Length: 120
Image (tube, rainbow, N blue to C red; front, side, top):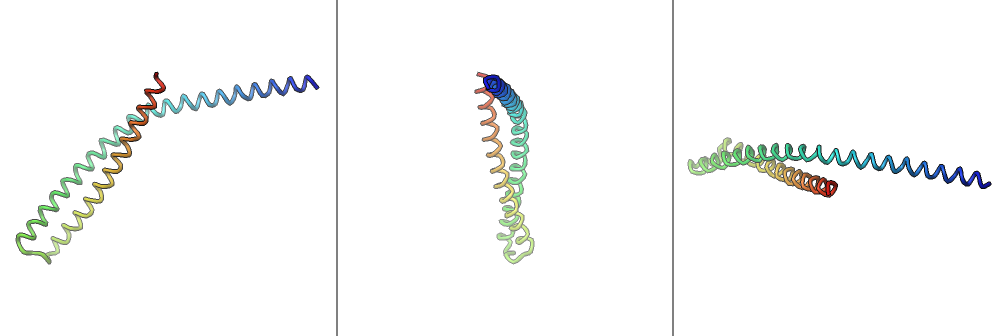
C-alpha cells in the first residue's frame, strides 16, 4: 500500500510540474502579446486620429453649407437637408472614433504598465 501512495505522490508532483510549465508558457506568451499589442494600439490610435480629423473637416464643411443656406434664405432647400444628414453622420462617426481612440489609448497604457511590471 505504501508503494501505491508513493506512486500517487510522484504522479501528483509530475502533474503539478506540467501545470506549472503550462502556466509559465502562457505567462510568457502573454508578455509577448502585450509587447505586440502596444504597437497595434499605437497604430489603432493613429488610425482613429486620422478618422477624427476627416470627420472634423466634414463637420466644418457641413456647418459652412448650412450657414450659407440660412444666409441665402434657402431653408427648404434639399441641399440643406443633405448637409444636415452629412453633419449628423460625421458627428456620429467622430463620436465613435473618439470612443475607439480612448479605448485603444487605455488598452495601450495598460499594456505598457503590464510590460513595465514584468520588466521590473
